[in-house]
Length: 431
Image (cartoon, rainbow, N blue to C red; front, side, top):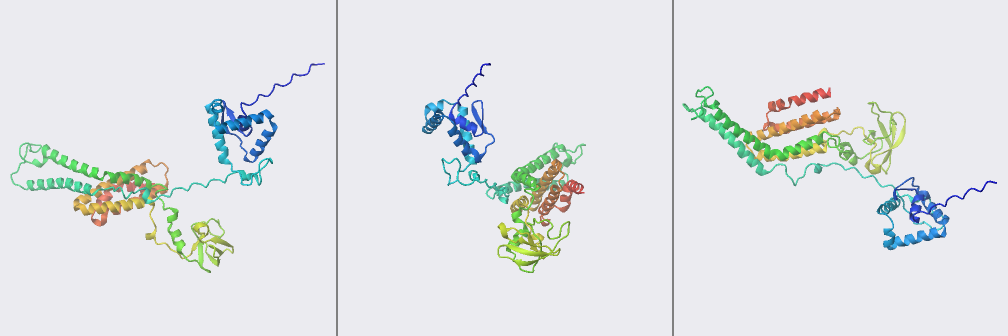
């Protein structure tokens, strides 16, 4: 007879009971470190733990107990016997288990299963973090003015130098026999001193210096406008937040009544129950107005059902048929509203502290900078989104009105001339 097969080699004992427990609970061990949970099943974790303790030998249970005590007591020997990676992985696994489990108050030990449903182990899902709703304060900080009063004074002084130089040249041109002095002959040696390189050079230096001064003093405002104009073209900054929807705001104070004619409201989610759609407006009549923010409506197609008129946190499936919102009352997108408020503050300060020509000059600088920003945004946009272009057109028209300042700002012809190329780009893009 053949000799009996040799007995199977003994199963090696785990490095410690904790490692074995985590391994049987679904923790993958790599390189001596338990790296991550794999196939974790919260409903069976308790059973696995009891099964593990019951199936191991007395020595295994003793090892598990002694290990638990040593860790609890903070034994130096237990800590030094394991690698740093293993401890870190075990801590991470424990934290992962703890974050995904919450034991019910009625949990009973020793029975092999918890009281109540296994779903009680799972902690309720965390509520989603609400998306931040932009406000004007996200763009405009009232504590950090974009234009200082001292800046207006420096602008006024710088532009006054150029104005005085213009006046001086005009007076000298009318003086009979004035040749401008030595070195001020005209380019052909004649007496037209105003065309001499020396005079032209001095005049150019003054003009350039005054222009640089204006740009420097207006730079905080111009940089802010560049960033906010770009934001005003996006979906988030260029749209009216839903909580500021004018129809929604009107409905919050509107009093619904029985027999009132209604149409779909801003929160309609019921498909074609009303018989409308594809451009067709369906009209219904409230048959029963309930006290809980619901109303029963009979539609012209014969369908009758209940809809929200303020319930569930202020949602409206319906709105009155004859409720009209004045376009002037519609709120602006938050980025556009911030631009409007910033310009009103800046233009008021400039108007109060600058003479007419200096005021027009500053508005011309702002207008030119804004046109440059919008041109760059449209040039860089690769999406071809019609909404993006439409917002740019709306912002440009609003800026146009501010820069014209009711006739006191940049002349209409100058505004149109500077923005002609941008208008052409917008028109071509919207075709």
